[in-house]
Amino acid sequence: RDRDAATFALEPAATACGTPIQVLLNIGAPSDLAGLDPALCDGIGLVRTEFLFHGRGGDDLPGEDEQFEAYRAILAWADGRPVTIRTLDAGGDKPIPGYTLDGEANPFLGLRGVRLSLAREAVFRVQLRALLRAAAHGALKIMIPMVAVPAEMAAVRTLVEEEAASLATAGTPPGRFELGMMVEVPAAALTLDLFAVDFVSIGSNDLVQYLMAAGRDSTAVAALADPLAPAVLRVIETVAREAAARGVPVSLCGDAGGDPAAIPHLLAAGLRVLSMGAAAVPRAKAAIRATTLPGRRP
Ligand code: PEP
Ligand code: MG
Image 1 (spheres, rainbow, N blue to C red):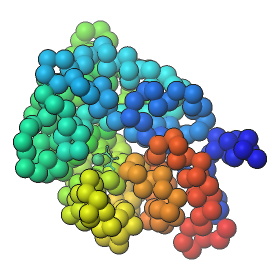
Image 2 (cartoon, rainbow, N blue to C red):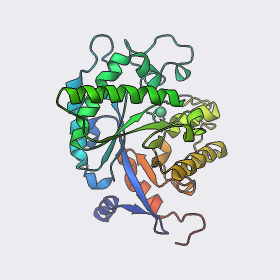
Image 3 (tube, helix red, strand yellow):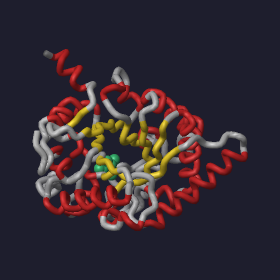
Image 4 (cartoon, rainbow, N blue to C red):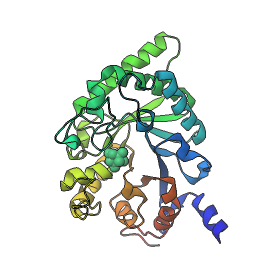
């Protein structure tokens, strides 16, 4: 029976009414993939690259080659499946001593994610070069965290194009890649039509805290930080609809994506791609297979 359950987890997921749902993996470090069969997933939906920077503030930041090797190893594991690697999301709940700002009164509303990357352009360029070099080794999607306004993505795109041109000049043009963003700031969620991106992924952890004004690190207001709150589901529905209307692939990579109780609601909101930690996959696939979409028959 256990063996059957394990086999079941390696098969692609579809709802009870027959709609295929892609299940992607979230990873926080390459070691998360050790011993995993890639058949478990349809790709990797979120690589949190903070692992490269842990304990590395000051003069010890990871170099281009070190980052390139880490990204290439993840692409190799995925064996042709798409891999979404997120650029550094430092700050907020992810401080890097010696790198992020000290003493911000409201770190979640401060210099984090893409804001910090654009403020530390030299460090950001190193990561972008490593990613562009890795793009030759798989189906790479580069994802930018904490985007609020289109000007941020435009600034990122300029840097990406400059680094790609410089690699080409050096005789090592980057492979094909896509450039997209997290949708986790309400301002971006409500103005998707203003952004030029190849794909988006909803970061429900941050989207919930910013919509509900309930910190993700606060147990005292945990009941408010509910990914199934009507306000959150309406925004997710809006993003899914807007993305579909514009032909922009959309996924969700917050913790709700792997929560069996949330999954029927996320699918009803229009999502067809969910990204989650590997441990969540068997129960998530079971929840997907038990779901009948609104207006459909099992
Ligand atoms: C999120 O905010 O939902 C997300 C996936 O990113 P993180 O949890 O790393 O902020
Ligand atoms: Mg986030």
